[in-house]
Image 1 (tube, rainbow over the protein chains, first blue to last red):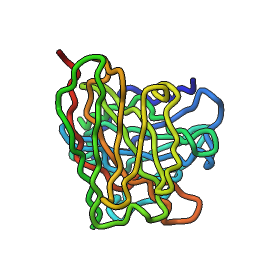
Image 2: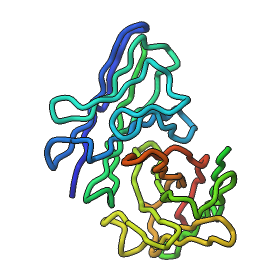
Image 3: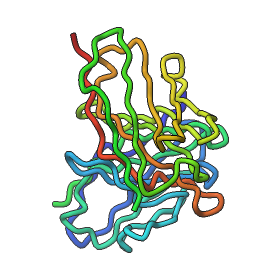
Length: 111
Length: 122
């Protein structure tokens, strides 16, 4: 069974930059995994930020960006704000996009 | 504006079946998108359950496949989740979402319901 791994927790200072990663136990993550990134705040449903590696939605703040680096999917937050404190989840699609697997999530603290 | 809303019992007895429906408004379930279920046990991460296309084609999480059925009702513009033989481990907030393919060769879970808590307990 494929395991998708994220950093359990990260801390960043306001105004700083932080990188969250998403790795697959099957090997390098590619665009064919259609990496998706979600933000979830307490008591709320997840909100899609990035899909298909680096596509943004109309509601995605410009300071969020997605990419692939070193065999992992990457979510970069620049100019971090206090309201970015949340849990972040990645989702990878496997088996020809017929199986979705979420990472365990990263708890981002802005301090 | 697309809106999804989960509905169903909030309490299910162990060994029973969990049944939820996701009503879709602002979009047709016949559109070229998949429709998915995701769950989140209290204090834990997200788990992908499965998805369905309006044709009835489905994909399921192998760890749940023996107990889960996702179906679609085009006349009501909704899709449903049925999970059998539930245990306390199935206690979770269940979300439905749209899997958009609006842009070629992309996959985006772009619209989510607010989620509904289902507790498995006697």
